[in-house]
Image 1 (cartoon, one colour):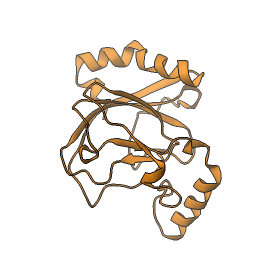
Image 2 (tube, rainbow, N blue to C red):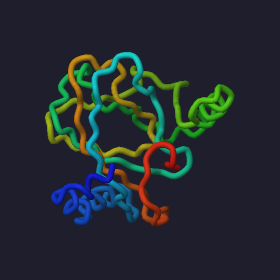
Image 3 (cartoon, rainbow, N blue to C red):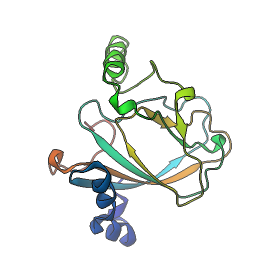
Length: 172
């Protein structure tokens, strides 16, 4: 998290507004880049988180850049259900289902399956721009190799409070 504070190249990229511009052209609103992170997504065939959204309240976005080749599902490709950012009723049902079972409200275990999803296979350098209100996951049966990503976390600028970026327990 906040790799831009450790690496001069990432710091320059962070300050350049290039990533925000990519999103602003597509989303049509001013964006705020919150953090750059290097992620190692290791081999895992049993404990990967299933379909989920990143926030139950505010829309947020990510840009993923594969840092190694992801050429088959066993390499753990990013997986997303197209159009699911519009599935309000399905999300509400999942929220109540999760609340009754003391699970994270952002889990989307009902209504979503791999048969409805798209997964992204490509060479190192692939850029994936994603709305994290879509139901998504890393491929659940990653048994071939680890996946390395550079991840940019963004929100709409109007939702920026100026608070330091946190991931996990303190996120929205």
